Length: 84
Image (cartoon, rainbow, N blue to C red; front, side, top):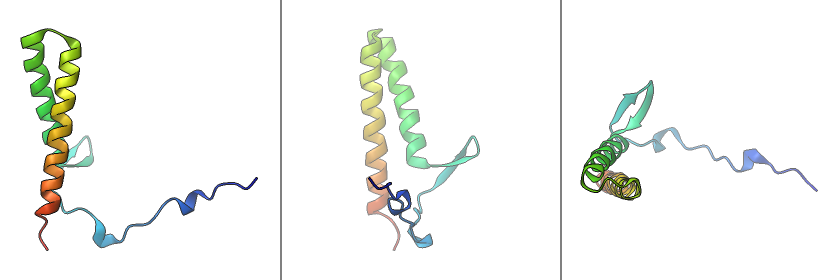
């Protein structure tokens, strides 16, 4: 049996391939702004869902749906409207 070549699984991206998305410093790490928006939206939806339903399951589903929707919508929008 041969050992897996882990370095073959890692591909280096060219320096110019980095995202030009606006970033925010969160605990010393650069987070793309769309991720911050998604987390904030999920928190707001969680508070509203908890107030309306009082159900932890409803809160989890609603906040997860909000997070994924905002995350991917903004990410795809930024990709489509990236300056050339």
